Image (cartoon, rainbow, N blue to C red; front, side, top):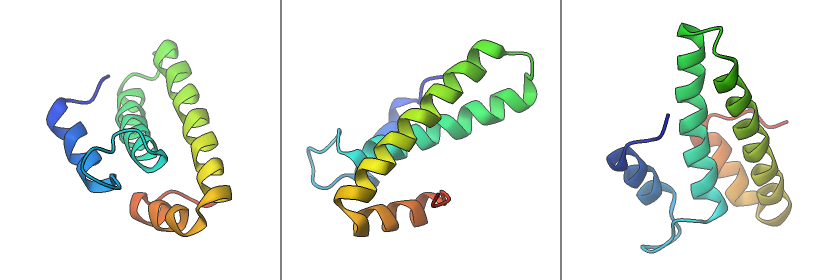
Length: 90
């Protein structure tokens, strides 16, 4: 369930720090969030797809670690990001 190029570049341009930024924590969290929502919708239609469920859990864990890093280093950016993406602050 990969993102198409247009959607991916739109997300990168929205959350990037500058023009060449594609790997910052903010961009990675935004891309992971999009993939997570896509997989969640897929699993609602296909509840027996256990391999996709495992992939979803791995993506959620990766996003959790990136958000924890961002919270500890740049709290203002973290707060703005979770507000924009509508992610709960745990």
